[in-house]
Length: 191
Image (tube, rainbow, N blue to C red; front, top):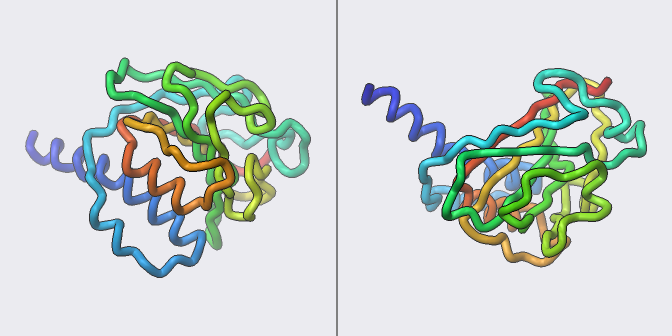
């Protein structure tokens, strides 16, 4: 029983380090000194779904650079979290050769449980969108036909509090520091 709890704690602490490490690797930042200061905590699970996406299935081409639909609709749910203050969404991709972040939407009101299609074009009031790997602010439709596309929803204990268009590493660091719940929907390849 103790081994299971230890493994669970290790997984939970890896969440905050993963987001920061991804940001640094994408920006070429060489200073990793703040990673060791992460204050890992228990991370609750969020169920993430979409009327347009299915776990392990291809990303519909209309949500890629071949289409014109913008960001896909997303829904999420979790146990009630008294400390929840905001929601953040990070969309990233991974291939054998590279990783990229395609969208970061943050400071979504904690009471929000879904986003409609193309929410990047009309984000929830009070939210912000970070620069992504390409330098664009907003949803950057993915183009790699053979990749994993992760749509991750985070519940945060506070707001990111950075202005829209903030640099990716700064926003991901704030998300990592405040994550209290996380869930993911992964599409594989582009249809």
